[in-house]
Image 1 (cartoon, rainbow, N blue to C red):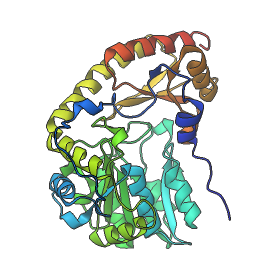
Image 2 (cartoon, rainbow, N blue to C red):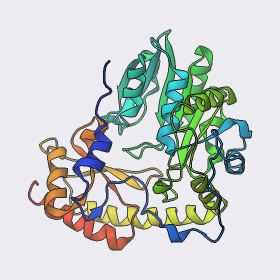
Image 3 (cartoon, rainbow, N blue to C red):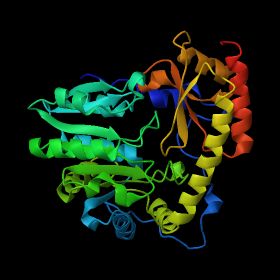
Length: 357
């Protein structure tokens, strides 16, 4: 049986980087929160949760998106939601369109299922924008799914509403599903699921809210797809932690507070990053559009994978090299950090750059 390819992003974060850095500018959410930031006064029972998720939490999420509760499923982060979705929707011989630089899961898992995958490159010459004509040319009579990520990880680019609407119109005529990873969306009424029955979305508490350790994500889409995903999930993780679901409810009921914290960190961090980039005219900052990280394009003479390893091993700063996203000559820097963390991290990157530029 063919083995699925090693997961480069996770291998970098959890194998190569583990224990080798002091400053984390690599993880793609804001600075994480802690256990004591939550109200732990209630004596929560620790029974199993439901396989599709606690009803109260699903209801909270449904209200954020203004959809029915049966369109919501709670998962272990958005990555499990995507995995369950691919496994439930796709069959051998289906055709899938996805993009790079991007998340390796979006092509490896469909290919492992037996689908044929077209990976369309997002090019720096076009500012990493999604080109609708490229998608039209890639569609075949077997195309079943187009995988989007907006705001995009790692480039920080947001797909324009006009492009989304044109794509949805095209997919409706061909019965093609669209799923969007919306981890960095803060107004869920703008979600792609509001536009068509063929559209689904995933998100979580990991990136914007600062609780990746809760491993709490969700899927929003057609209720029939939810049923299929729940059934597949019964063969794997069964359900989420009841405790984590209760704590997640606390977070989402205070959504405004956490969104404000997120926006404050992003605003101050981006200003600091822009001031820093002015000191390095050889680098090109791709302007982030609603993400706590930015894509920094390097001269083609620099191997950014080697640079990132040197930065980590010598200067103890973690960033993400473009190579883990199937790209080259760039790094992703997460700036959604308190300035006391961000400033020394950027200073150390400057020292490493002095050895290359």
